Length: 491
Image (cartoon, rainbow, N blue to C red):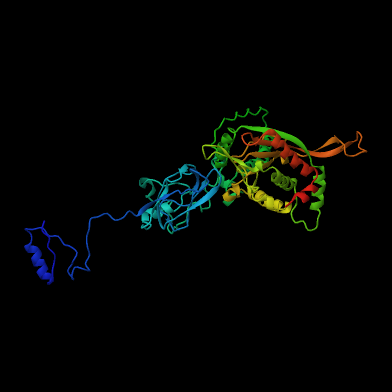
Protein backbone atom coordinates (compact mmCIF):
# COMPACT_ATOMS: atom_id res chain seq x y z
CA UNK A 1 0.00 0.00 0.00
CA UNK A 2 1.35 3.42 -0.99
CA UNK A 3 1.53 6.23 1.56
CA UNK A 4 0.92 9.82 0.54
CA UNK A 5 0.81 12.83 2.81
CA UNK A 6 -0.92 16.14 2.18
CA UNK A 7 1.49 18.95 1.60
CA UNK A 8 0.98 22.68 1.32
CA UNK A 9 -1.48 24.35 -1.06
CA UNK A 10 -4.95 25.78 -1.14
CA UNK A 11 -8.15 23.99 -0.24
CA UNK A 12 -9.20 23.75 -3.89
CA UNK A 13 -5.89 22.23 -4.92
CA UNK A 14 -6.20 19.65 -2.18
CA UNK A 15 -9.68 18.71 -3.36
CA UNK A 16 -8.42 18.44 -6.92
CA UNK A 17 -5.59 16.16 -5.83
CA UNK A 18 -7.99 13.92 -3.96
CA UNK A 19 -10.21 13.70 -7.00
CA UNK A 20 -7.28 12.71 -9.16
CA UNK A 21 -6.09 9.97 -6.81
CA UNK A 22 -9.05 7.63 -7.06
CA UNK A 23 -6.88 4.95 -8.63
CA UNK A 24 -4.60 4.58 -5.61
CA UNK A 25 -5.22 4.26 -1.87
CA UNK A 26 -4.56 7.25 0.32
CA UNK A 27 -3.46 7.17 3.94
CA UNK A 28 -3.27 10.37 5.97
CA UNK A 29 -0.43 10.26 8.46
CA UNK A 30 0.80 12.48 11.24
CA UNK A 31 1.23 15.80 9.39
CA UNK A 32 -2.11 17.52 8.68
CA UNK A 33 -2.94 20.51 6.56
CA UNK A 34 -3.44 23.77 8.40
CA UNK A 35 -7.02 24.07 7.10
CA UNK A 36 -7.92 20.62 8.44
CA UNK A 37 -6.16 20.85 11.81
CA UNK A 38 -9.12 22.41 13.64
CA UNK A 39 -11.85 20.55 11.82
CA UNK A 40 -14.32 17.99 13.19
CA UNK A 41 -13.29 14.37 12.85
CA UNK A 42 -15.72 11.49 12.45
CA UNK A 43 -14.91 8.05 13.79
CA UNK A 44 -16.90 4.86 14.27
CA UNK A 45 -15.21 3.67 17.50
CA UNK A 46 -17.62 3.21 20.44
CA UNK A 47 -17.17 5.75 23.22
CA UNK A 48 -16.12 4.55 26.67
CA UNK A 49 -18.95 2.97 28.64
CA UNK A 50 -20.71 5.52 30.86
CA UNK A 51 -22.60 3.00 33.00
CA UNK A 52 -20.46 1.78 35.88
CA UNK A 53 -21.42 -1.08 38.20
CA UNK A 54 -21.43 0.02 41.84
CA UNK A 55 -19.70 -2.91 43.55
CA UNK A 56 -20.39 -3.80 47.19
CA UNK A 57 -17.03 -3.38 48.89
CA UNK A 58 -15.76 -5.42 51.82
CA UNK A 59 -17.20 -3.85 54.99
CA UNK A 60 -14.76 -5.68 57.25
CA UNK A 61 -14.87 -8.53 59.79
CA UNK A 62 -14.61 -11.09 56.97
CA UNK A 63 -18.26 -10.61 56.02
CA UNK A 64 -19.10 -12.12 52.62
CA UNK A 65 -22.78 -11.22 52.28
CA UNK A 66 -25.25 -8.66 53.60
CA UNK A 67 -29.02 -8.28 53.54
CA UNK A 68 -30.59 -5.34 51.74
CA UNK A 69 -32.76 -3.54 54.31
CA UNK A 70 -33.93 -0.61 52.17
CA UNK A 71 -33.01 1.39 49.07
CA UNK A 72 -32.67 5.15 49.34
CA UNK A 73 -32.72 5.53 45.54
CA UNK A 74 -34.71 4.23 42.58
CA UNK A 75 -33.80 3.87 38.88
CA UNK A 76 -33.64 7.32 37.31
CA UNK A 77 -32.59 9.12 40.47
CA UNK A 78 -29.59 11.44 40.26
CA UNK A 79 -26.97 10.87 42.95
CA UNK A 80 -23.78 12.61 43.91
CA UNK A 81 -20.71 11.28 45.63
CA UNK A 82 -21.41 10.33 49.27
CA UNK A 83 -25.20 10.28 48.75
CA UNK A 84 -26.87 7.35 50.50
CA UNK A 85 -27.60 4.41 48.19
CA UNK A 86 -28.99 1.74 50.50
CA UNK A 87 -28.98 0.33 54.01
CA UNK A 88 -27.65 -3.18 54.57
CA UNK A 89 -27.43 -5.52 57.53
CA UNK A 90 -24.55 -7.90 58.09
CA UNK A 91 -24.10 -10.51 60.77
CA UNK A 92 -22.73 -7.83 63.09
CA UNK A 93 -24.04 -4.40 62.14
CA UNK A 94 -26.44 -2.30 60.08
CA UNK A 95 -24.62 0.18 57.84
CA UNK A 96 -25.49 2.70 55.14
CA UNK A 97 -23.78 2.41 51.74
CA UNK A 98 -22.93 5.71 50.02
CA UNK A 99 -22.21 6.45 46.36
CA UNK A 100 -18.69 6.73 45.01
CA UNK A 101 -19.84 8.37 41.74
CA UNK A 102 -21.90 11.27 40.46
CA UNK A 103 -24.54 10.14 37.99
CA UNK A 104 -27.95 8.59 37.43
CA UNK A 105 -29.13 5.27 38.86
CA UNK A 106 -29.89 2.89 35.98
CA UNK A 107 -30.54 -0.46 37.65
CA UNK A 108 -30.90 -2.03 41.11
CA UNK A 109 -29.51 -5.56 41.22
CA UNK A 110 -31.33 -6.70 44.39
CA UNK A 111 -34.81 -6.57 45.85
CA UNK A 112 -35.24 -5.52 49.49
CA UNK A 113 -34.48 -8.41 51.90
CA UNK A 114 -32.27 -10.11 49.30
CA UNK A 115 -28.74 -11.20 50.22
CA UNK A 116 -26.08 -9.20 48.37
CA UNK A 117 -22.63 -10.68 47.83
CA UNK A 118 -19.48 -8.71 48.62
CA UNK A 119 -17.63 -7.95 45.39
CA UNK A 120 -20.79 -8.08 43.25
CA UNK A 121 -22.63 -5.04 41.81
CA UNK A 122 -25.30 -3.45 43.98
CA UNK A 123 -26.58 -1.16 41.24
CA UNK A 124 -25.54 0.46 37.96
CA UNK A 125 -24.79 4.19 37.77
CA UNK A 126 -24.58 6.18 34.52
CA UNK A 127 -21.77 8.58 35.35
CA UNK A 128 -22.35 10.64 32.16
CA UNK A 129 -26.12 10.55 32.04
CA UNK A 130 -28.83 13.10 32.70
CA UNK A 131 -32.33 12.46 33.96
CA UNK A 132 -34.52 11.82 30.95
CA UNK A 133 -38.29 12.44 30.90
CA UNK A 134 -38.84 8.70 31.22
CA UNK A 135 -36.46 8.53 34.18
CA UNK A 136 -38.23 11.52 35.74
CA UNK A 137 -41.33 9.37 36.21
CA UNK A 138 -39.28 6.61 37.81
CA UNK A 139 -37.83 9.01 40.35
CA UNK A 140 -41.28 10.01 41.63
CA UNK A 141 -42.18 7.59 44.47
CA UNK A 142 -45.18 5.36 44.10
CA UNK A 143 -47.75 4.57 46.77
CA UNK A 144 -45.41 2.72 49.09
CA UNK A 145 -42.08 4.12 47.93
CA UNK A 146 -40.54 0.69 47.83
CA UNK A 147 -40.70 -0.63 44.26
CA UNK A 148 -37.41 -1.59 42.59
CA UNK A 149 -36.69 -1.06 38.92
CA UNK A 150 -39.71 -1.77 36.70
CA UNK A 151 -39.86 -2.77 33.07
CA UNK A 152 -40.24 0.06 30.56
CA UNK A 153 -43.55 -1.31 29.29
CA UNK A 154 -45.27 -0.66 32.62
CA UNK A 155 -43.36 2.19 34.22
CA UNK A 156 -43.11 4.85 31.50
CA UNK A 157 -46.82 5.29 30.77
CA UNK A 158 -48.17 8.21 32.86
CA UNK A 159 -51.85 8.53 33.68
CA UNK A 160 -53.99 11.39 34.87
CA UNK A 161 -54.42 9.68 38.23
CA UNK A 162 -50.80 9.24 39.23
CA UNK A 163 -49.03 12.12 37.45
CA UNK A 164 -49.65 15.48 39.17
CA UNK A 165 -49.44 18.62 37.06
CA UNK A 166 -46.60 20.17 39.04
CA UNK A 167 -44.86 17.15 40.47
CA UNK A 168 -41.71 17.47 42.53
CA UNK A 169 -39.00 14.87 42.31
CA UNK A 170 -38.60 13.31 45.76
CA UNK A 171 -36.38 10.55 47.04
CA UNK A 172 -38.21 7.28 47.66
CA UNK A 173 -39.68 6.75 51.08
CA UNK A 174 -40.19 10.44 51.97
CA UNK A 175 -43.91 10.46 51.32
CA UNK A 176 -46.64 10.54 53.91
CA UNK A 177 -46.81 6.79 53.95
CA UNK A 178 -43.97 4.96 55.69
CA UNK A 179 -41.79 2.71 53.62
CA UNK A 180 -42.41 -0.94 54.32
CA UNK A 181 -38.65 -1.36 54.32
CA UNK A 182 -38.34 0.29 57.73
CA UNK A 183 -38.73 -3.09 59.40
CA UNK A 184 -36.91 -6.39 59.43
CA UNK A 185 -38.31 -9.41 57.58
CA UNK A 186 -39.47 -10.95 60.86
CA UNK A 187 -41.40 -7.79 61.75
CA UNK A 188 -43.01 -7.65 58.32
CA UNK A 189 -44.06 -11.28 58.69
CA UNK A 190 -45.58 -10.41 62.06
CA UNK A 191 -47.46 -7.51 60.47
CA UNK A 192 -48.78 -9.79 57.74
CA UNK A 193 -49.82 -12.42 60.27
CA UNK A 194 -51.99 -9.89 62.13
CA UNK A 195 -53.13 -8.04 58.96
CA UNK A 196 -51.61 -4.79 60.17
CA UNK A 197 -50.51 -1.79 58.11
CA UNK A 198 -47.04 -0.58 58.98
CA UNK A 199 -48.19 3.00 58.41
CA UNK A 200 -50.47 2.68 61.46
CA UNK A 201 -47.60 1.86 63.83
CA UNK A 202 -45.13 4.33 65.33
CA UNK A 203 -41.62 2.91 65.08
CA UNK A 204 -39.23 3.43 67.99
CA UNK A 205 -36.15 1.99 66.31
CA UNK A 206 -33.40 3.77 64.43
CA UNK A 207 -34.74 6.18 61.78
CA UNK A 208 -38.29 5.27 62.79
CA UNK A 209 -37.82 1.55 62.12
CA UNK A 210 -40.72 -0.53 63.41
CA UNK A 211 -39.60 -3.15 65.93
CA UNK A 212 -41.35 -6.27 67.21
CA UNK A 213 -42.08 -4.47 70.48
CA UNK A 214 -43.89 -1.74 68.54
CA UNK A 215 -46.14 -4.32 66.88
CA UNK A 216 -46.90 -6.05 70.18
CA UNK A 217 -47.63 -2.72 71.87
CA UNK A 218 -49.97 -1.83 69.01
CA UNK A 219 -51.79 -5.14 69.37
CA UNK A 220 -52.06 -4.74 73.15
CA UNK A 221 -53.41 -1.23 72.70
CA UNK A 222 -56.06 -2.50 70.30
CA UNK A 223 -57.19 -5.38 72.52
CA UNK A 224 -59.17 -3.40 75.16
CA UNK A 225 -61.09 -1.43 72.53
CA UNK A 226 -61.79 -4.59 70.60
CA UNK A 227 -63.13 -6.37 73.69
CA UNK A 228 -65.22 -3.34 74.66
CA UNK A 229 -66.76 -3.25 71.21
CA UNK A 230 -67.57 -6.93 71.44
CA UNK A 231 -69.20 -6.53 74.83
CA UNK A 232 -71.30 -3.62 73.56
CA UNK A 233 -72.47 -5.65 70.60
CA UNK A 234 -73.39 -8.53 72.88
CA UNK A 235 -75.38 -6.27 75.18
CA UNK A 236 -77.31 -4.83 72.25
CA UNK A 237 -78.04 -8.22 70.78
CA UNK A 238 -81.26 -10.06 71.60
CA UNK A 239 -79.86 -13.44 70.65
CA UNK A 240 -78.33 -15.85 73.11
CA UNK A 241 -76.65 -18.11 70.60
CA UNK A 242 -73.04 -18.95 71.56
CA UNK A 243 -70.21 -17.32 69.69
CA UNK A 244 -68.48 -19.59 67.18
CA UNK A 245 -65.16 -20.98 68.31
CA UNK A 246 -62.16 -19.11 66.99
CA UNK A 247 -60.26 -20.70 64.16
CA UNK A 248 -57.05 -22.45 65.23
CA UNK A 249 -53.92 -20.45 64.54
CA UNK A 250 -51.94 -21.55 61.53
CA UNK A 251 -48.27 -22.41 61.75
CA UNK A 252 -46.08 -19.86 60.04
CA UNK A 253 -42.45 -19.70 58.96
CA UNK A 254 -40.59 -16.42 59.03
CA UNK A 255 -37.05 -15.69 57.84
CA UNK A 256 -34.38 -14.99 60.41
CA UNK A 257 -33.35 -11.42 61.00
CA UNK A 258 -29.68 -10.56 60.36
CA UNK A 259 -29.02 -10.61 64.12
CA UNK A 260 -30.68 -14.02 64.48
CA UNK A 261 -28.71 -15.31 61.50
CA UNK A 262 -25.49 -14.10 63.10
CA UNK A 263 -26.37 -15.85 66.36
CA UNK A 264 -27.27 -19.03 64.48
CA UNK A 265 -23.91 -19.12 62.72
CA UNK A 266 -21.84 -18.11 65.74
CA UNK A 267 -23.51 -20.48 68.21
CA UNK A 268 -23.34 -23.38 65.78
CA UNK A 269 -19.60 -22.90 65.45
CA UNK A 270 -19.16 -22.33 69.20
CA UNK A 271 -20.89 -25.58 70.13
CA UNK A 272 -18.27 -27.48 68.15
CA UNK A 273 -15.71 -26.40 70.81
CA UNK A 274 -15.10 -28.94 73.62
CA UNK A 275 -16.09 -27.08 76.76
CA UNK A 276 -17.07 -27.64 80.39
CA UNK A 277 -19.24 -25.90 82.99
CA UNK A 278 -18.18 -24.78 86.47
CA UNK A 279 -20.63 -23.08 88.86
CA UNK A 280 -20.52 -21.91 92.46
CA UNK A 281 -22.44 -19.69 94.84
CA UNK A 282 -21.03 -16.23 95.51
CA UNK A 283 -21.91 -14.19 98.61
CA UNK A 284 -22.73 -10.59 97.63
CA UNK A 285 -23.88 -9.35 101.05
CA UNK A 286 -20.90 -7.10 101.76
CA UNK A 287 -20.89 -5.89 98.17
CA UNK A 288 -24.54 -4.91 98.54
CA UNK A 289 -23.69 -2.76 101.58
CA UNK A 290 -20.76 -1.12 99.76
CA UNK A 291 -22.87 -0.45 96.68
CA UNK A 292 -25.59 1.23 98.76
CA UNK A 293 -23.00 3.42 100.48
CA UNK A 294 -21.36 4.44 97.19
CA UNK A 295 -24.69 5.29 95.56
CA UNK A 296 -25.45 7.66 98.44
CA UNK A 297 -22.15 9.49 98.04
CA UNK A 298 -22.79 13.16 97.10
CA UNK A 299 -20.12 13.20 94.38
CA UNK A 300 -21.33 9.99 92.70
CA UNK A 301 -22.95 10.92 89.38
CA UNK A 302 -23.58 7.39 88.08
CA UNK A 303 -25.83 4.90 89.82
CA UNK A 304 -23.88 1.73 90.40
CA UNK A 305 -25.38 -1.70 89.84
CA UNK A 306 -23.68 -4.97 90.75
CA UNK A 307 -22.40 -5.52 87.21
CA UNK A 308 -19.57 -2.90 87.19
CA UNK A 309 -18.16 -4.47 90.38
CA UNK A 310 -18.36 -7.95 88.85
CA UNK A 311 -16.64 -6.79 85.65
CA UNK A 312 -13.84 -5.15 87.62
CA UNK A 313 -13.41 -8.23 89.81
CA UNK A 314 -13.04 -10.36 86.67
CA UNK A 315 -10.40 -7.98 85.30
CA UNK A 316 -8.42 -7.95 88.56
CA UNK A 317 -8.48 -11.75 88.64
CA UNK A 318 -7.18 -11.90 85.07
CA UNK A 319 -3.93 -10.32 86.28
CA UNK A 320 -3.31 -13.44 88.35
CA UNK A 321 -4.74 -15.89 85.82
CA UNK A 322 -4.00 -14.40 82.36
CA UNK A 323 -4.63 -17.73 80.63
CA UNK A 324 -8.39 -17.01 80.95
CA UNK A 325 -7.87 -14.01 78.65
CA UNK A 326 -6.06 -16.07 76.01
CA UNK A 327 -7.45 -17.79 72.95
CA UNK A 328 -6.53 -20.76 70.81
CA UNK A 329 -4.70 -19.87 67.60
CA UNK A 330 -5.23 -22.26 64.70
CA UNK A 331 -3.65 -20.10 62.01
CA UNK A 332 -0.68 -22.44 61.58
CA UNK A 333 -0.37 -26.19 61.32
CA UNK A 334 0.55 -26.35 65.01
CA UNK A 335 -2.06 -25.04 67.50
CA UNK A 336 -0.81 -22.27 69.78
CA UNK A 337 -2.17 -20.15 72.62
CA UNK A 338 -2.46 -16.46 71.82
CA UNK A 339 -2.11 -14.26 74.94
CA UNK A 340 -3.84 -10.87 75.06
CA UNK A 341 -2.85 -8.22 77.62
CA UNK A 342 -5.94 -6.04 77.20
CA UNK A 343 -9.02 -6.97 79.22
CA UNK A 344 -11.82 -6.34 76.72
CA UNK A 345 -14.95 -7.62 78.43
CA UNK A 346 -18.03 -8.33 76.32
CA UNK A 347 -21.44 -7.75 77.91
CA UNK A 348 -24.28 -9.90 76.57
CA UNK A 349 -27.36 -7.69 76.10
CA UNK A 350 -30.97 -8.39 75.23
CA UNK A 351 -31.92 -5.77 72.62
CA UNK A 352 -35.06 -5.15 70.52
CA UNK A 353 -33.24 -6.68 67.53
CA UNK A 354 -31.89 -9.71 69.41
CA UNK A 355 -28.85 -10.78 71.42
CA UNK A 356 -25.79 -8.54 71.00
CA UNK A 357 -22.45 -8.51 72.82
CA UNK A 358 -20.91 -5.02 72.94
CA UNK A 359 -17.43 -4.73 74.38
CA UNK A 360 -15.97 -2.43 77.05
CA UNK A 361 -12.28 -2.25 76.23
CA UNK A 362 -9.23 -1.77 78.46
CA UNK A 363 -11.11 -2.66 81.65
CA UNK A 364 -7.79 -2.96 83.48
CA UNK A 365 -7.36 0.81 83.10
CA UNK A 366 -10.89 1.82 84.15
CA UNK A 367 -12.33 2.55 87.58
CA UNK A 368 -15.65 1.09 88.67
CA UNK A 369 -17.55 4.38 88.05
CA UNK A 370 -15.95 4.63 84.59
CA UNK A 371 -17.07 1.08 83.82
CA UNK A 372 -20.58 1.99 85.00
CA UNK A 373 -20.64 5.05 82.72
CA UNK A 374 -19.62 3.06 79.63
CA UNK A 375 -22.05 0.29 80.55
CA UNK A 376 -24.89 2.80 80.82
CA UNK A 377 -24.01 4.22 77.40
CA UNK A 378 -24.07 0.76 75.80
CA UNK A 379 -27.38 -0.08 77.46
CA UNK A 380 -28.87 3.17 76.13
CA UNK A 381 -27.74 2.34 72.59
CA UNK A 382 -29.11 -1.18 72.92
CA UNK A 383 -32.51 -0.01 74.19
CA UNK A 384 -32.97 2.37 71.26
CA UNK A 385 -31.82 -0.13 68.64
CA UNK A 386 -28.75 1.94 67.73
CA UNK A 387 -26.08 -0.48 68.90
CA UNK A 388 -25.75 -2.08 65.46
CA UNK A 389 -24.82 1.33 64.03
CA UNK A 390 -21.53 1.11 65.94
CA UNK A 391 -19.80 -2.06 64.71
CA UNK A 392 -16.59 -1.02 66.47
CA UNK A 393 -18.38 -1.68 69.78
CA UNK A 394 -19.28 -5.25 68.81
CA UNK A 395 -15.84 -6.73 68.23
CA UNK A 396 -12.54 -7.33 70.00
CA UNK A 397 -13.83 -9.04 73.15
CA UNK A 398 -11.51 -11.34 75.12
CA UNK A 399 -14.00 -12.63 77.74
CA UNK A 400 -17.77 -12.24 78.13
CA UNK A 401 -20.11 -11.65 81.08
CA UNK A 402 -23.81 -12.50 80.69
CA UNK A 403 -25.98 -11.11 83.49
CA UNK A 404 -29.18 -13.06 82.94
CA UNK A 405 -30.01 -12.63 86.62
CA UNK A 406 -31.84 -9.36 86.01
CA UNK A 407 -34.48 -11.47 84.25
CA UNK A 408 -34.29 -14.69 86.27
CA UNK A 409 -32.52 -17.99 86.58
CA UNK A 410 -29.92 -19.52 88.85
CA UNK A 411 -27.44 -21.99 87.39
CA UNK A 412 -26.71 -21.25 83.74
CA UNK A 413 -24.83 -22.92 80.91
CA UNK A 414 -23.63 -20.01 78.76
CA UNK A 415 -22.24 -20.74 75.31
CA UNK A 416 -18.74 -19.57 74.46
CA UNK A 417 -18.26 -16.61 72.17
CA UNK A 418 -15.99 -17.32 69.20
CA UNK A 419 -12.38 -16.33 69.82
CA UNK A 420 -12.75 -16.45 73.62
CA UNK A 421 -11.85 -19.12 76.14
CA UNK A 422 -14.33 -18.32 78.92
CA UNK A 423 -17.73 -16.79 79.58
CA UNK A 424 -19.43 -15.99 82.90
CA UNK A 425 -23.16 -16.32 83.44
CA UNK A 426 -24.51 -14.49 86.50
CA UNK A 427 -27.74 -15.80 88.02
CA UNK A 428 -30.34 -13.86 89.99
CA UNK A 429 -29.22 -12.53 93.39
CA UNK A 430 -31.49 -13.75 96.19
CA UNK A 431 -31.57 -13.62 99.97
CA UNK A 432 -31.21 -17.01 101.65
CA UNK A 433 -30.61 -18.30 105.21
CA UNK A 434 -27.03 -19.34 105.90
CA UNK A 435 -25.04 -20.28 108.96
CA UNK A 436 -22.82 -17.49 110.24
CA UNK A 437 -19.15 -17.57 109.23
CA UNK A 438 -16.94 -19.94 111.19
CA UNK A 439 -14.48 -17.06 111.71
CA UNK A 440 -16.95 -15.49 114.13
CA UNK A 441 -16.24 -17.05 117.56
CA UNK A 442 -19.76 -16.23 118.74
CA UNK A 443 -21.37 -17.59 115.62
CA UNK A 444 -22.27 -21.02 116.93
CA UNK A 445 -25.20 -22.33 114.94
CA UNK A 446 -26.59 -18.86 114.35
CA UNK A 447 -28.47 -18.50 111.08
CA UNK A 448 -28.09 -15.23 109.20
CA UNK A 449 -29.56 -13.74 106.04
CA UNK A 450 -27.16 -13.52 103.11
CA UNK A 451 -27.46 -12.21 99.55
CA UNK A 452 -26.08 -14.81 97.13
CA UNK A 453 -25.94 -15.44 93.38
CA UNK A 454 -24.75 -18.40 91.34
CA UNK A 455 -21.83 -17.76 88.99
CA UNK A 456 -21.61 -20.23 86.10
CA UNK A 457 -18.45 -20.43 84.00
CA UNK A 458 -18.12 -22.11 80.61
CA UNK A 459 -14.53 -22.69 79.46
CA UNK A 460 -12.75 -23.96 76.36
CA UNK A 461 -11.31 -27.31 77.45
CA UNK A 462 -8.66 -27.12 74.73
CA UNK A 463 -7.08 -24.17 76.56
CA UNK A 464 -8.26 -24.45 80.18
CA UNK A 465 -8.63 -27.27 82.69
CA UNK A 466 -11.02 -27.52 85.60
CA UNK A 467 -8.51 -26.66 88.31
CA UNK A 468 -7.43 -23.46 86.55
CA UNK A 469 -11.01 -22.28 86.11
CA UNK A 470 -11.87 -23.18 89.73
CA UNK A 471 -8.96 -21.10 91.05
CA UNK A 472 -9.87 -18.19 88.83
CA UNK A 473 -13.57 -18.39 89.80
CA UNK A 474 -12.64 -18.48 93.49
CA UNK A 475 -10.46 -15.38 93.05
CA UNK A 476 -13.41 -13.51 91.51
CA UNK A 477 -15.76 -14.72 94.27
CA UNK A 478 -13.28 -13.69 96.99
CA UNK A 479 -13.05 -10.13 95.65
CA UNK A 480 -16.84 -9.85 95.64
CA UNK A 481 -17.23 -11.37 99.10
CA UNK A 482 -14.74 -8.83 100.42
CA UNK A 483 -15.05 -5.89 98.00
CA UNK A 484 -12.62 -3.82 100.06
CA UNK A 485 -9.86 -6.02 98.62
CA UNK A 486 -10.52 -4.57 95.18
CA UNK A 487 -9.14 -1.23 96.34
CA UNK A 488 -5.86 -2.92 97.23
CA UNK A 489 -5.76 -4.93 93.99
CA UNK A 490 -6.42 -2.01 91.63
CA UNK A 491 -3.51 -0.80 89.51
